[in-house]
Length: 605
Ligand code: FAD
Image (cartoon, rainbow, N blue to C red; front, side):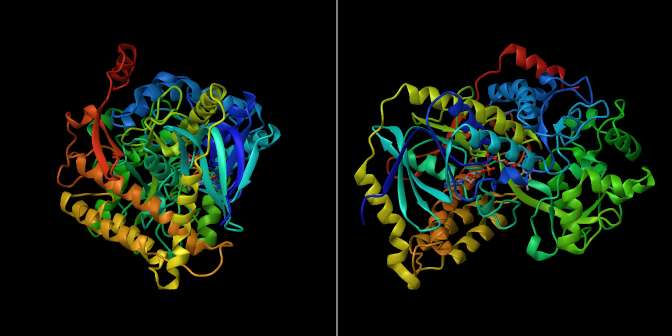
């Protein structure tokens, strides 16, 4: 096998979702050469699937909103283990980033007086999500893509990065293969930005597509970077539960933002049964007040369906376990009921939630303007990821930056809906800016031929094992079942220890996985390569979850159901020690400046 073809860029961006595209725009605008790699076609990232909107305190629908309230909401949602500096930057800068998108051509829904319309979402005190019906991600991607292309960024579509290359402890580039021909390519780069999204495919029920295999997390980890907060996985409360072929597909929180309510099989709005103390002052005391809130009445408080996702998901699980679930193991989400309140409700629902209307009509033969949907929790998002510096998005490896879902910090123990799209544009921009500055300060890196030869050899090993090796799809399925059953919404020590034992066995099976045939579009071979990453992130989630002996945000331990002040003082980090073992450490959270502390305290009422 000859040496792989080589490309060379100042800044190389891995991932073409919102974070990667926004980073590419900023780096290219700084005048450096920029390459962009994505695993599938341009425009097909998770970002395009985003429905509800992006959170930015512009105060268009309620002038009491401002960055301080958004900051406090994000910290409360994250249960105060967030990187407070990231939460601050995000809240301060999101409105400018949204206005910038508008200037670049994004067409948002409007208020009657012509400003960007903002909708309600869980955990946000005021209506804050700029949106385009329930297709906000599509508009975001369309706008960013147009801008990226016109700045002369070179795009490598259907290329998958399998290793980061290092030169004297600094990142020097990446090794990738193309899906079409299965050939290898080395990319030399003075700075690399990882923007590879999430890890949902480590679980059986997920809203994530085949691309969500935790590649960036695992690439960074293998290269020696630190991952933090990996125990915090978000199980979105409302995924489709029926028919089985679509189980896990997301039902946007926008349905509840528009007045949709959750009911059990007895017809009871069970979310009123359990309202956490720290949200009680902000939560409606009855159905009437909740409805008024969704219709923009500023004197009303939000309905309990709009409590944070972790809490709503656990309430749904409780109802199902108590035998009060829907026929297919979920609960009922009813938006059709608003006909009692709103003239022309069916048209209103079709206009505000067009994707949801079509999704249920086409996939479940159900008309959401007439009947309730059946919904249940689905693995949606990971709060944990690559540890980065808040201002620059630099990881712990020189020359390596990360942004978007694969980076960690802003969300703490739980992300508020809408805070991801705004995270992408705020921190994507910062990552691009600082990666370009880093590239300018460096001479061209040297690519390590030996490391490249070893990595390509290892990547081709499944062909040598051939058809007698383990079937990679079976290993992946077993992994997903392990994580779903033993490290899911509710966790206990014994089950997670069991998961670690099973992960060891799965690692051994993955090392024996084999495929036959040629390298063109060989999805079985790709599955073998993805397994490495899925196993790494699964181990990181399990070890971090074992270490956090309390319940907080997305991490709920049945054996430690309470929140503990001791555990609120640090983040859990994992890194690879020189022998290749995963090492778990506690990283103390620095004290918040007085100005931010007083904002948090003021907003507790
Ligand atoms: P992604 O958009 O996931 O993009 C990742 C990119 O990395 C892709 O281009 C992929 O091809 C590439 N990639 C991955 N691995 C490799 C590799 N090894 N080599 C090369 N390329 C690679 N958030 C909100 O704020 N509001 C919402 O309304 C909302 N709705 C959502 C609805 C759904 C159905 C889903 C799934 C998520 C939703 N989210 C929402 C969450 C949000 O969309 C994601 O967190 C966010 O889009 C992630 O963006 P990203 O740029 O980090 O990664």
